[in-house]
Length: 348
Ligand SMILES: NC(=O)c1ccc[n+]([C@@H]2O[C@H](COP(=O)([O-])OP(=O)(O)OC[C@H]3O[C@@H](n4cnc5c(N)ncnc54)[C@H](OP(=O)(O)O)[C@@H]3O)[C@@H](O)[C@H]2O)c1
Image (tube, rainbow, N blue to C red; front, side):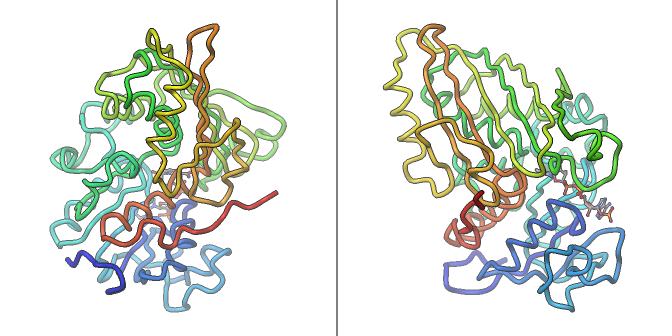
């Protein structure tokens, strides 16, 4: 397929999982992307229904764009499916010359054994794991150009790795990492479950998935990729009563002699040219990123305890899912990375 020099052609894309939350967010972004045409919206339910009816925020999607069962003539296939589903389909699309960007978790881990341990399934296409580019754009940009298969990072790993990445990259912290993270309920998808009812969630916060949340091995792999050393990781996610938003507060001991100034310089240097990571001067709130593709990062030195405290805040459906997937598509195809992703956060 063509890799674009910008100002050339329109890319034809499909969204598989188009009736879900991440699929709906992808459609919201891609339908306004100046160099993209959404040619297929796929799911099992709502077959034949116009996408604009299946997803009520997409009022002006073309009437002809209906929920269907195949990806048509798409050159790029985005998958926003439950764990294990994209891996059953990706090989066929790749064999047809299409590019695949999986917003789910099927290609994020390089060790197939970890899928059995954490996801409880035998990976259907383990031969693809070595090829998949783990799309934490800011740290792998050169590998994205022309990639066939991109594993979009999970929402918690994105906030965590962007918060800790500069410290890991510059060797400022030891391997003992604790991540305390919070997510809004849209992180769990659109299916109905007692745990996500308003009456269950409202006025309440709880931890879950400890100590073997599915994102733990992904975060550990990501820190090792950036810093070269496998961390000893404790990751505790929490569900909080809001719709969107994710905050990761990360703690790691500082190496001897590391100063606050070194930390500040590492963060400033790592993200100086990044369009979507902002190093902010105080602790960010999730709402500061609401609806945007930004990840807001703030890192301080707790000198008394010789610990780094680094926070990442993002919108789980944008930088934590659909926005970063579009950013990866832009990098893959050779489009300017910000294309289609210019929305500022909503406030208040
Ligand atoms: N929500 C987030 O914040 C977020 C962030 C990062 C990554 N992710 C990942 O993105 C994926 C989707 O998450 P979500 O929150 O959007 O979940 P969701 O709201 O439950 O959506 C899942 C979608 O997949 C479709 N689907 C399921 N099995 C299918 C199949 N075999 N063939 C075609 N379509 C199928 C569902 O529609 P039908 O049931 O009608 O088929 C639905 O459209 C998950 O892997 C999740 O981990 C989500």
